[in-house]
Length: 208
Image (cartoon, rainbow, N blue to C red; front, side, top):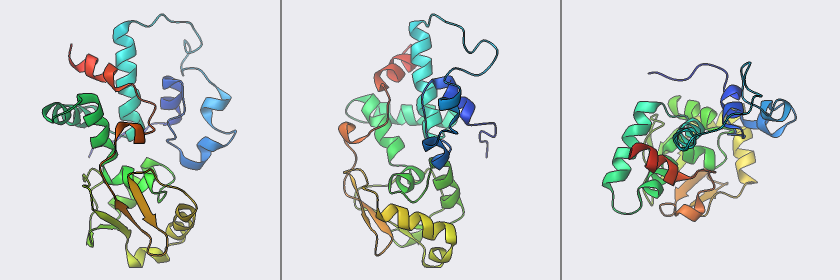
């Protein structure tokens, strides 16, 4: 399966804001955006006039990089969002938020979406009692996500469980620290998604 293998700090610098792709490091002075708050490359510090198309493209790139999705899959999510009733941009964000790797991250059981994706792939979680190792698995209201019993012995999983117990998940999720399981209370509303995305720009880009 194709995936991005280069430095993810370059992606944050290119978009001009923290995408929190490196987990804990993003909260320290070692964060690349803190140290070099300009785009990578020899022309990164130059001033550029951005066109309307450029703004739309950057918003799309920022969003898919934030969620760790490659271009083809992101386009398929958009096409699916377009077919659903309601506002296309909001539908798109709801689909992205419902991914299993993102929900694991939102619950605090991964320091970044990349780590959450890796933990899901390694089979550390169940959905409604069944092991699921597909990061793109779309959750529905009422689904229960739990850490597998044998995975609870892993030092890293233990650390993440302790951290998750001290965090407050988004309003559309709930987390039971004693059972190390979360539940999707309802599908997220736009105001419950804190991603810094202007989704209308993505819709305008794909509507060209």
